[in-house]
Length: 345
Ligand code: AMP
Image 1 (cartoon, rainbow, N blue to C red):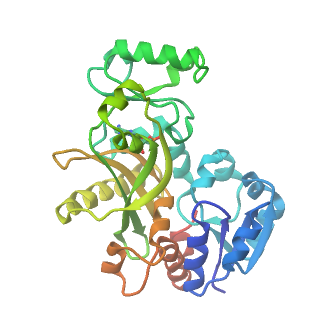
Image 2 (cartoon, rainbow, N blue to C red):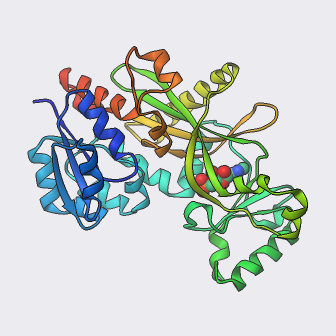
Image 3 (tube, rainbow, N blue to C red):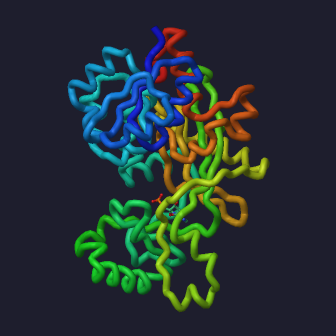
């Protein structure tokens, strides 16, 4: 029996459900209460179960249901932001598409940084202490959703002043300064390539690319420099949407090189390595150098741009191929070969 594709109703669920249907697979939607109406509008799930929270997937009833349906659970961003990743690793019995052990490396800033560095991927410099700041630095607060409260500091003095203002505003508590992550701020433009490592084909595919539309950082250029100065705006990085991006063809070599380094480091450090979709979140500077400051070890929401395929997926496939469909295709192929273990953990 071909596997059923199961997904939590949020993030990129519509695309994952659509892709599964295109590949002729059954779908099971685990829907957060209150969102059923939205998903009914698209009629992409063969079966829907309602749950109170994301954590409900760890409950025995949902796990039994997934196992009974021989479902493959496709993880996305909601799962990572929900935490409880240790429980997911140890207590969740159904098959997960991808590597369940890599999610905590994505969630934890130090582990994330270690994986990127050990991969030999070019990353922005980290400052161990604010006293080392010797150029533009981005200061990332712990658990800051959407980069709210992040700020740019130019020097140790500038840092001290800005952190004091944040403490006064109650945005950060005293003592929390230690958990702050300070990184070189790369002057450049964001580039987020959507990769797919096919364990079945043994090849790295570029499925698309986007950039994020972030407020208020992308809003600043809309007002004059004079107003920017007078209003003393502290930019934030809250993601509002994604915009498609097609890269200069000459950049693709580096994009693939960085992706390949990531695949081989993940195999070494987090066995069985990357399976399926991942994203390296990069800034490209004026010399065309790519600096990776983050990664996602699963499907990213930016792929929602390409439900009907992207310029890059069109080069590889002769049919519309969104990331959701690519996932379903891989699961189907592995299942037909009797190698579902190759793409699930
Ligand atoms: P993050 O929470 O790490 O995803 O960062 C939020 C946003 O801050 C990103 O989408 C980028 O626009 C920006 N950003 C993060 N790190 C850097 C960096 N080292 N240099 C320049 N921009 C950055």
